[in-house]
Image (tube, rainbow, N blue to C red; front, side, top):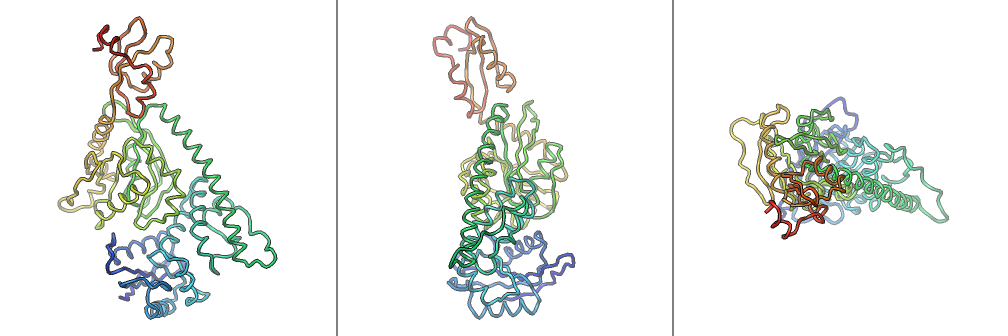
Length: 448
């Protein structure tokens, strides 16, 4: 099917033509049409004007050009007719696909796939040195197997490298080396350095998590499809002013805020990068240090734009990504956001494994937030355990620590020290187990 739409927007300089390809026997998360609409939003986010699109269902992928050569000729004719400077495939192109299609496009039209487009958006939106490092690594790991005429001469690199000031131009060419061989060697060197830099970031994050754990505050992480409203929610709950925009991947860098709960306790609420269907695997790997915030959380809030026509598919895409980072067994609440945009009743959403409940809210209109906070407090309380301990009087620092963390449920004094009943997160139980009382002590005191 070949369609042309009036996508014109004068503020964008580059013009793109989109292509979606589906396998007849394959179950796709989104239809070709819905996925192309999402690709058009991605292009808009990247500052690109979409001037037309084509889609095709095929029985099997063409090993050379992904789609049939006749269809490709038709698409290329449309690209030149519409004066497009970029051809974007909604599918991830293999290195061979990239090479063969570029041969037919010639020098004047750039070829991108969904992964390359998402990487470009991440490069534009990374605002911290950590985010720039992660994006640059993902870009290089994506480019390495795809080096062709379009990717050579790394001195022209953009994205993460540019955000960090770059890491130098390409070295001198050795005897008999082609420019591609020089670039491959240079990319391999840069990947190695970026991985080392990110390991330092990861170590720093681990130290930060350990200090945060000592505060005794539970960590609640926001996850969800891009543009589900996570940043708006964290702003509403913590009275912050994190950047928000009605666009895909408006914010990438993790943010953590303290939020008070109705039971008098508090939590740390952490925002994370948004997910999307067909999220490049290189991005998931590069953002490992950031996504570990999810794995360290006591509770996940899965935020869904319930007003979106593909809300159910978005839930499934997030679940797939959580499984990919080994977070599918974590306790979580399903938060149906943007209910103020729905006319009539809410869509029916069935609970899946490990969900403690479903809460309906509007972060923008600040509707349902009190009930959400109560639900978070209840879910966190279910993950706590009791422990009876005696803290020796000479270990006053431990007693003060427990008091500051609000772990003390009941308190008495004995000749051996403070006899306490603690209610604390399961993750902290082993840290204080050495002070646990034995059966003989229970019989001799009123703790039994």
